[in-house]
Amino acid sequence: MSPSDEIPLRWTTRVGPTSRVSDATVRKGWDDVAGWWVERYTEKGDINREWVIDPALLAIVGDVRGQRILDAGCGNGYLSRILARQGARVVGVDLSPRLLAIAKAYEAQDPLGIRFRQSDLAKLSTIESGAFDLIISNVVLQDVRRLDAALRELHRVLRSDGRLIFSITHPAFDIPPAHWVREPPDSDRAEERPFIAVDRYFDRVALYWGPSGQPELVGFHRPLRDFTEGLRQAGFVIVRLEEPRPLPEAIRRRYRQFADQLRIPNFLMIEARKA
Image 1 (spheres, rainbow, N blue to C red):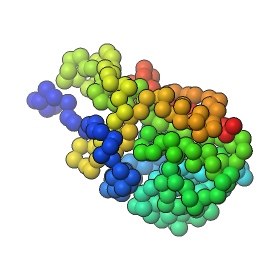
Image 2: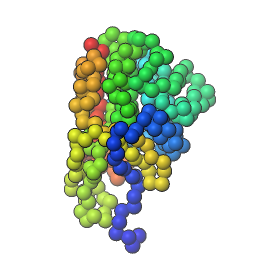
Image 3: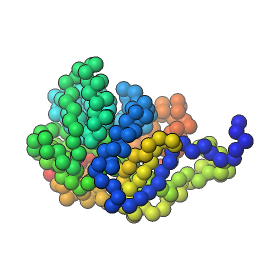
Image 4: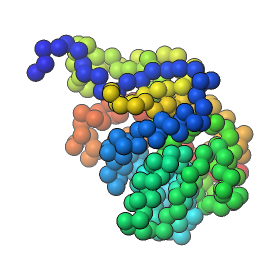
């Protein structure tokens, strides 16, 4: 046991003005962290995707056989591969050349017919209008700098009455200084976190975050209204909203990681249709 009464710093988070962030900043951030980011993944994604997000996401998605799907912000392509194995025709798009190189390497080792392209979601100029039956964006849109432009582009490349299904970090709880209060303060047990402290929800700021000692990523905190209004103005109609919780098996096997998410949602999921 450590004689220190302080909890070791695992992740760092800070805020800054959005005006200082460019598309190049976002792209470089993802290129810089590609190594440690992919180390966290299995073929089922990281632990949050495997045990919390994707079970709810894939239940909403349903049968994808024969569907043309855009994996918008595909990263290393793990979700593209899951969908392709279920019979979908998948195109994966991502901003980061390094993450795409990893996705393409997996495809070369085990070809599933997935096509990967480098592109900003706010400018999908290489994709024709109405090209997809379904668009999935999994924990991505909170990191997109030009959100409204991205939603308009996703609307454009979706067929009439097509679906957009996306997850994001929950806007109510993703902004510093939101944090679990610990009593006593040197405890890291879930049972000794009586509540979460949240403030500055309406601020629109850049979020810099990452594991301690690693390069930082940059994303964006926006109030939930920015997402719903962006969808409305792009021409979408929201048909479903979910706040996924950990599977019972996740609580049994990984209680320490997931107990908090039985009390407060870390993620938000929206299904919208092209009007």
